[in-house]
Image (tube, rainbow, N blue to C red; front, side, top):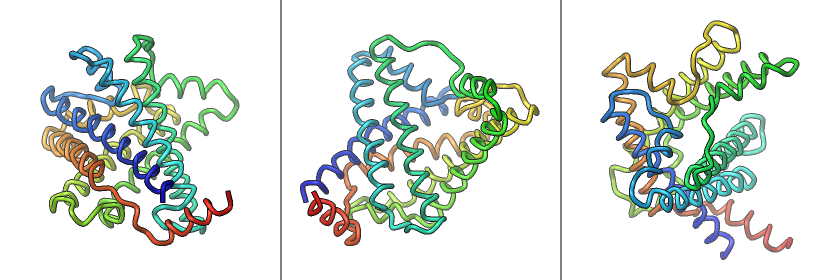
Length: 262
């Protein structure tokens, strides 16, 4: 049971950090009416009072969430199974873990004043182009981002996140989660398409969340809806930080079996 408590602690820290980032992401987007990305939010936090300490706390939380997602995929916390579809979903959890760990690294560097200006996703894509088959790899990465976006839409529809919610969670949590996952899905699909277009030589513009939000800002009603959804995803994540529980009996048995093996 101690291992379960540790896993829940990692999850809570991560949900709290993710909640702060997305809540501010939605707020900044709505207040500015322009493109904002997670890196922009982190850079803005550096300039607020005690921003460095807040960024360190967020970095610690994001590390916890990354570890939780890795462990979740390993133990199949969502019960996806070992068939090709289930393994793909579990791989997606590992990819999410890497993304959040990278964001934690960026937050820590920003807090210490060590961040370097760069092109982010665009710079990574340009580096990939220097290797044999780089364009194909970048295009595949874009396709995977699109699939991740569609996965968020599916999560919004099926609300499987409720498996981790305690019964005492506020009644509006499910609605906020649905709106948040749908908004994330739309942003991910747009980012993925930008990456694919860049790989195919159809677009040489910027790629990433900030660029996607900037593109969405041209459609005011859609931008407002998605920015609101991202803010709601932040609130949903904060609720998850308070009410996340691991209750799946199959998961508990796998954890107990692992502890016995050790």
